[in-house]
Structures are given as C-alpha cells and as structure tokens.
Amino acid sequence: MPKSKPEIFLKEEINKIIDASMLDEYYYVLFLVAKKTGRRLAEYYDLKVKDIDFDRQIMVTKVLKKRRRVESEAVLDNELCRELRKLIERNKLKPSDYVFRKYSYRTIQYRTKQFVKKVGIQKNFIFHNFRHYFITELIRNGWSLSMIQKLTGHTSLASLGIYDHVVARDIKQQAQDALNNL
Image (tube, rainbow, N blue to C red; front, side, top):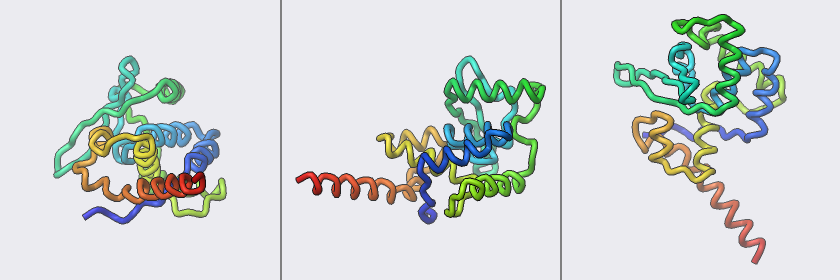
C-alpha cells in the first residue's frame, strides 16, 4: 500500500534552502546533489569517491533491498560534477573515502531542518523531501512513471502512487486556466 502523500515543495523553496547552505560547502553540495539526483540519504551516505565517474557524468549508488545491496546509476550534470570535484579536492579525499560521511544521519537531518528554519519555510521538511521534489518535477515535466521508477530505483510503480495528487492538482489548475479563457 502506498504511503501518505508527501509534502510538496516549490522550486523556489528548495533553492532557498540550498542558497542558505552556500557558506557550508558540505551541505551545499549534498543538498544540490539531492535536488538534482533524487536519491535517498543512505545512498549519498555510502557514496565513495571511486563511485563517481566524472567522464561519464554518473555516480553509482547502492541501496539495501530485501537484504541485498543493489547498485544504480544517477546522472550528474556539469554543475554537480564541478561542485563534487571541488568538495573532493578541498577535503583531499582519496578514491576509497566516503564523500558525504562527515556527519551522522541524525546531524544531517537536524542541520537540514536548521537551514529550512533559517529561510522561514513553515512546512515540515526532512531530507527525503529532496527526493520527493525531484520526482515531482520529473512528473511535471512529462516523464512516465516507468522512466521515473528506473531512474530513482523504486521497486514498483505502485510506490509512485503517492505522487498522483501532484498530477491531479496540475490537471485541476490547467482546467481552471482553460475555463477562465473560455
């Protein structure tokens, strides 16, 4: 059974959170990567330098599914490659080093909430909302659920059912716009 509807955040809200983190390179890069790849925190947490292929512009992430580690590729754009390279170089990370294991899960969640509070967003925001934002934007841009499933590593299409309300809300808005133009 699909989970409850995720809280939807606007691009402007996500960008405010990322902008607020600019002075902290670790969180800035982590948030930017989360916004543009839509992976789970555990996948970033287990990411090693050697898992990033800058030439092919991908990162290989791993997630535990049914007690086995499953790998999948996340696509990186030029900005992500540039920011990840800078983070790796500044911190003198070796290929076997973890990219985002500087802080604990709990600290990352806590700091995420601090950045959200700093920009005055009143909605409940957790790190996983970056994933929801990513998937919502793909839906809004016309991606099929099967393509999103493959890109994000969802086990089944049914698990993407929690995003139906996004499509319904967008359709309702389009209908209202059309009716106002009659």
